[in-house]
Every structure is written in C-alpha cells, then in structure tokens.
Length: 407
Ligand SMILES: *Cc1c(COP(=O)(O)O)cnc(C)c1O
Image (cartoon, rainbow, N blue to C red; front, side, top):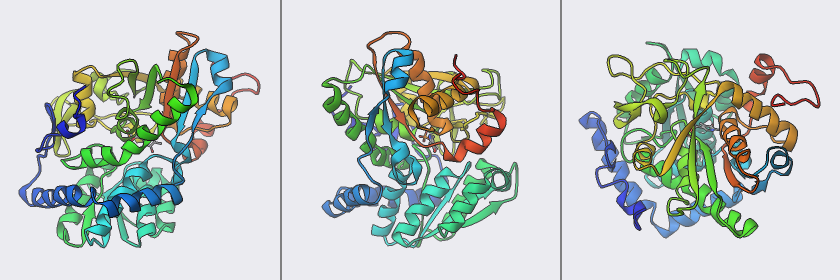
C-alpha cells in the first residue's frame, strides 16, 4: 500500500478512487464543508486528542482485550483470537465514533445531535454520547422499526434522547435518513448530524474511520505482544463497514495478513434475500455517495435482508468499495444459518454471546480455522449479543445440551 495511505485516501474531495464524494443539495454541502473544516482543525489539536484519549480509557474502558479462544480453536483447529469490542462501553464498537462525533460537536459549540437509526444500535450509542456530554439528542426512526426494535427505543428514551417517528413511505431506514437531514437543515447552527457508519457524503466515511482506527491500533499491538507475530487473517463483519475499517486500517501494510470482510448471505443469494453488497453489488449511488450498491431495475437501492439487522444496508462504505477493487480486502458471505450456528458455538465453547452481526465474522473464522491447524485468525467481535437473545431463543431454539448446532 502507499506509504501515506491515510493522507492519500480520501482525496480532498472525499474520493477513494472511484467511490465516495459528496452528492447532496448545495445548502447541505455548505454545512458539510463546515464540518470538514472543523474536523481538520479541531481533531488534530492536542486538547481534542487528549480529551478523547481520556474518555476512551476512563469511560469506554479501552483498550478492550484481545482474547485467545482456547476451546473454539481446539474444536476447529487454527488459533482464533477475538478483539473484544463487545466489552467497549454500551456493548459494541459504535460508541467509538459516536464519542468522537459528539466531542467534535462540543468543540464546535453545538447543542444537539441528530441522527437516524434503523435497528436502533446507532441511536443508542449516540444517545449514550449525548448523555455523557450533556447534549440534546434527536433520533429519527421509521415507525416500522420502532415497533420491531422496542428495547432500543426504550434505551434511547431512558438515556434522555427524543425518538422522532417517521411515518411516510416504507417507514424504515431510508425515510428516517431523509427526515434526519431535514431536521438538521432546519437548524444547522445549533445542531450536528452524526452518521452511524463509514457511509454518507464526505467527510463522514473518513471521520468515522479515523475514530474507529483505535480498534486496529490496539489489536495489532496486542496481537504482536501475545504471539510475537502478525495474524494470518483478520476477519470482520461488514454492514456499512465501520468496525471492519477500524480493524483493517492497522493491517493495510502487512502483506502477510489477509483481510476478510464478511457480508450477510441471508437466506440465499437470490435477489432480496441477502445484503452482500461488495460481493454482488455494482457501482451506484446512495445517501449522497458512490459505492458498490445492490440495485433495483431503476438503479435505486434494492431490498435487502439479513438475520442481523445491523448488516442489512444495500450500500457499503466507499473505502471498502476501493479496497475490493484493488483486491486488498476479500469480501465473502456467511448465511443466516451459519451465523446462528456460530452464535451458539461461541456462547457454549467460550461463554461469550456475540451480536448476530459479529457472529458472521466468527462463522467465517471457523471456516478458515478448519483449513490449517496453525493458522492465526484475529476476529473483530464488534458487539455483544444481549440485544439478540430473545429473537434467537424464539426463532432458533437452543440446541440440546452437549450437542452444538455445528455437530
Ligand atoms: C451496527 C453494527 C454492525 C455493522 O456496522 P458496521 O458499520 O459495518 O460496523 C456490526 N456489529 C454490530 C455489533 C453493530 O451494532
């Protein structure tokens, strides 16, 4: 890779080769330019960096550990390690970029954080950050998702956020995005829009990546310290791609570490039954940026599906789109069934209940482990599975004791 990769990508217009950029109305562009400028000035200051460092240590509980899965590795071969983002405060990696975005908001003198949420995970992380900084928080959410994701709606409200129901169109994520942008444009002086992954118009894919880089920086050092070597494989699930960019970013120069982005294969690889964007998508445009996109006949976002609601996005981050083209990251898929099997395997063999999103990465690591006995595999365990237990217990009943689903 280029020596100054992070200076080169994105370029000054927010492009990662053919992807990214900013394709939004002029009034919104004006605000994005202000955020970009503020980000470059403020986030490089000593004060910002030391405050963020202190938050990560004392509030989020970082560094999160890297853990060697003894029993899982014994069963499947290989040596499987987990970067434990499930132990990051609030139970997933999303708080890494939410704390960064909220800290930037504070330095910019903003009073309110605005965002959309689909499954509610981003809304909960942002509401957490807002509570910490004493900022208002307004989360736009489709009515359909509000009904489906009741526990997360309750969490946001307990944390002090206002949940704004979106009642038009399909009443899901896409309408929620439009509604959040509209609200933001009504008061861009006092509020700031906070995106939930490495997606959206420039500068968001860059900002979110930079705030998530802490995962990779920690994990690479921890892995070296534990094993004296670098991992043969680094594996992370990809929805929009923030947890994956976070861990991959530290290994882009390591030619001997192969990077795998795991996408949801869902029920089948037929139209509408998966969300394997980098695997099956074609270049297109969504939410103001260019990327690989699963498209319908009109070139709009196609319907997507995954058992893990944090992965069912028809687009993918522009940087992932580039990393696919230059073959730096391999994009692969894991089906719903393989995900559920891995969910139970990690729970029973290691006492760690993974988020269904993260279970996709674990499932692919199990496949890699079976290929070679000594292969060292580092998995980004992006979040914990507490949010998923009722759904899994209901829909995929617990396998008989002593007999795991994979046997
Ligand atoms: C939201 C979420 C994801 C997917 O988002 P990325 O931006 O692709 O990382 C993955 N894992 C967990 C636990 C999540 O909450």
